[in-house]
Length: 102
Image 1 (spheres, rainbow, N blue to C red):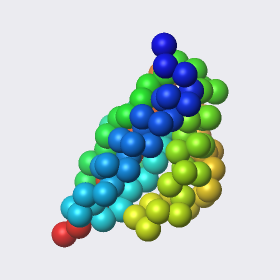
Image 2 (tube, one colour):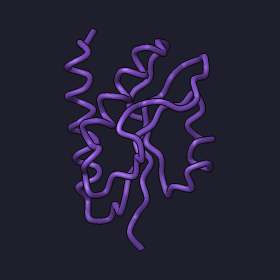
Image 3 (spheres, rainbow, N blue to C red):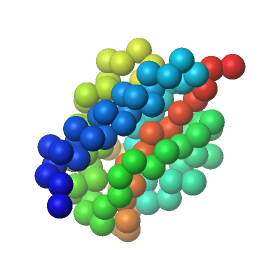
């Protein structure tokens, strides 16, 4: 089983590679038990699940670290510098929502 640091390293690389594409205009890092519902709520062009866990604490910790890491990225659309928001029980998904350039 990968360590917390290994998981974060992998996710940071995945997000960085995804948002480096010229076609990506902006992105948002989040957590949800219902990724498809979040797509509609964000109004994003696409949402990509990156990691899932049954542990709410693990999901919050990962979301928090990713948001802090990418907070100053010019394409970042997270308005808070930390994890938060609704907390629902169930399988937690860390995702990146994407908006593409017209």
